Amino acid sequence: MEINRFTDYRDKIVESCAKVIVGKNDTIEMVLTCFICGGHVLLEDVPGTGKTMLLRAFAKTMGSAFKRIQFTPDLLPSDLTGINFYNQHTGQFEFRRGPLFSNIILADEINRATPRTQSSLLEAMEEKQISVDGATMSLSEPFMVMATQNPIESYGTFPLPEAQTDRFFMRLKLGYMTREQELSVIARASTTDIIASLETAVTPEETQYLKENFKYITVHPSVAGYMMDIIEGTRKESAFVTGVSTRGAIALYKAAQVTAAFSGRDFVLPEDVKKVAPHVLAHRIVSGSALSSEDSVKYIEKIIAGIPVPLES
Image (tube, rainbow, N blue to C red; front, side, top):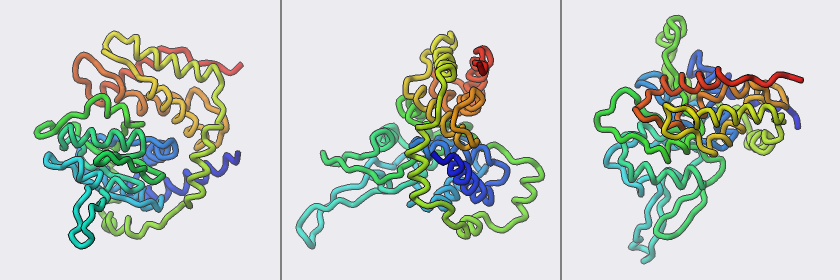
């Protein structure tokens, strides 16, 4: 395995996307980690911080087919999957594909759609397929859903059910830029023009190599045990109704492997686990009372801080 191919790939993607989203290289790398692992991203932040632009820039840099869906209360499941319609010219029913038949899907303000429409994403996100009128159709690879939602405004929204939240590989937040970064952004050319000028930075062959080989990154049994200590810590925490699922444990394992590879190593360190754990685990816990994104992250960080780190023998 050529570990330098991972670092070169990361550098090209981050450098390209950083032309659009300034000062958020860590978030860009996390989105890329989800993409390599075959997972989906939930971007939760206030309006105007660049969520949509980040996802547009990422898709343009990857050279992948991209579709944006604006979620509204009147959006129907068939608006996502597609419909069978009767063609009067041929006298036959034909299937008209919906926007889910793409590589990268931006589900903008996903919590504004009804639960029925939200649930239509479950099969696509987990099985990489959709079912319409009894017929099942596979979606093209790579396939990734990147959803955004506003955590502040709750009027006219439908909170994501736990079953769907657990399908997201990571929950990320952009946050505000520093004063100097924001000054440079407001004085530059239009962000839309910058995205239009971006070129594809990687080839499908490079992407496929990373997707097939990150699983060979070594995870020592002590580090794997460290991950499980964190997972079990969420299940024993009295403040939580339920802890992290097995799906979350698998996601943490994969994310740590890719993080190690992006750092130029063919083995995972506890620091890799600490880096990704809050993003992978925080949205998977269920508490007796509603937790904000920041509070759930603090709970995970508190659990991690109380678990001994395995030392090199």
